[in-house]
Length: 257
Image 1 (cartoon, helix red, strand yellow):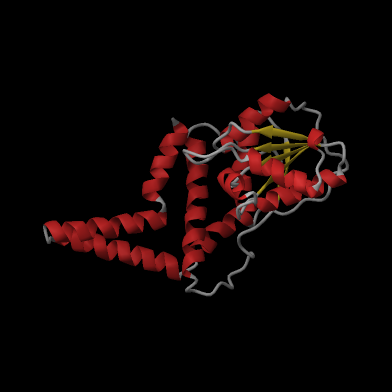
Image 2: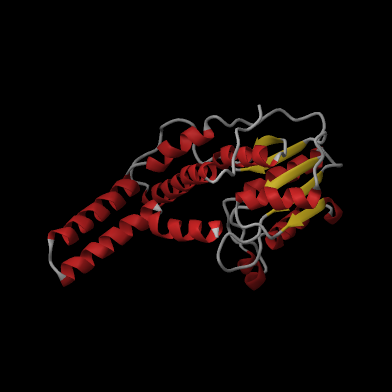
């Protein structure tokens, strides 16, 4: 239920979606009733869309999430590497025989680098389908790891999870990590705060290993990059709302230091 409610909420209230809905609703009201409410919706929706597209709002919102996350030193020993899914498309692989472009690919690259440095570590990829339809991310993840040369017997696939909470709950149930084991968590820097708080909540001690960043950590972005500004804003707002929703639902705890 949590998953479906989150999907429905985001479909309506993603910043770029909300701007479109307001503009469309206003145009409809003007066509039907020609009243002030319709004009207000059109002006508000249009201003919101243009503002988010022109200014790097997403960068401003993303930097606080990423600036506190730095790559750690290589651990002396690693027992396991947990990789969180984030948008790999199994349908493209099935239909074209090649991987579809995805922002989460750096997670797999970083995990493979760790796997080469620690040849005895298990590699766990966790990712079902975050969409309401479509196959699990484990299918393209297995394909990519195999292409890079990871031995199949080192790879553990968890393909039932649909969100970050289920990533940890289902993966922990599958691999049963021991308190004495050293586990490294591979996910994007902006996602690391929520991921580590969930790990603390389920009692899984992990070393945060940020695999990729959206921002450079300083404000040198030029206004007017419409598509990227909208995409970054939606991504940043989604993560901030995810932090709040998970905290309110009791799914996070302060990450251990």
